[in-house]
Amino acid sequence: MFYVGTPPWHELGTRFERPPRDSSEAIHAARLNWRVRKEPLLAEDPDGNIPVPNKYAIVREDRRIVLGIVSGEYQPLQNEEAFRFFDGIIDIGAAEYETAGALGSGENIWILVKMKAEPMLIAGFDEVQKYILLVNSHDGSSSVHIRFTPIRVVCQNTLTVAMHKGTRLRAIVHRHGLHRRLEEARQLLESIVNTYRDIERHFDLMAKVKVDGKRLQEYIEAVFPMPKTAIEMGGKEEHERVLSLRDEAARLFTDGMGNRNPSIEGTLWAAYNAVTELVDYKYRQWRDLKNRLRDIWLGEGSTIKVQAYREAVARLNTWG
Image (spheres, rainbow, N blue to C red):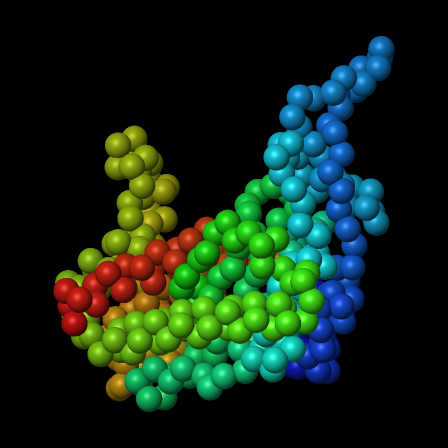
C-alpha cells in the first residue's frame, strides 16, 4: 500500500510525497497493477482432472496464486476498473487519493480518498475529516462497496457511519468519453455531499443530546448485545467478553480521547466515540497491524461501528 504525507495510525505502507494525480499513478504507487482471471475449478484424478460444476478459481496472474473460489455468475472487477471509479471527482478537484493497498495476498483491495472540503466541526471545535473508502474483494467474500469513513482528528478514530453494499461499479465506471465522465463525476459528488450533509447533521445533534447513566447503559447494551449462546447455553467466556466490552465503552465515555471537553462531555456524541475508540484501539489484541486494519475496515470492528452509529441516530428523536 501507499499513503500520502504523515504515516497513518496503522503504520503500514510506502510514503508518497504528494497525492497521485490519477488512478494510473495511484495503482502503481500501491503496487496493485496486476490482474486476476477466472479459471474453471478441477479436481485432481489419476485418470484425468474432473471439472467441479459451477466452481471457478480467481487467479492472481502475476503470482499465479488462487485468491478465492467463486460461482460461475461471479465476474471479477479488475483493480484498474475499481481505481477509475474516483477519477472523475479527482479530475474536478473535489477529492484526492490518501491511501490504497491490499490485504493478505490481494484478496481485498481498498482505495481511500479524502474530500477536499471543509471538515465537519462538531460542537464548534471537534474536527472530523471527510473520507470515502472503496473496497473490492477478489475471493468472492463480498461485493464491491463504498463506505463513508470520516475520521475524528483529535484521536484518529475512523467513524464508519454508512455502508452501501452491492454497488455495481460497472454501471458507474467511466467508459463513454470525457463529457459522460464529467457528468457522472458531478452526480457522484452530489451524492457524496448530500450524504455527508446528513452525517454532519446527525453528529451535531448527537453533541446536543445529554446522556445519563441509564441512557448510557441502554445505548451500550444495544451496541454490544448479549449473544443468545451466552444466555441460553451458558457461554461463560462469551458472556464475560461482552460485559468487558460494555465496561470499557462506559469508561471511554468519560475518559476517551477528546471526550472530556465541556462542549461534548456527557453527550451521545461522546458515547458514540467511546465505541469507535474502543474498536480502533482497545477492542482486541491483534497479532499484527494488518489484522487490525482488516478488522476495523472490513470485519467485526466495522460492523460494531455501523451499529453504534445506527443506534445513536435512532435515539436522536426520543432523547433529543
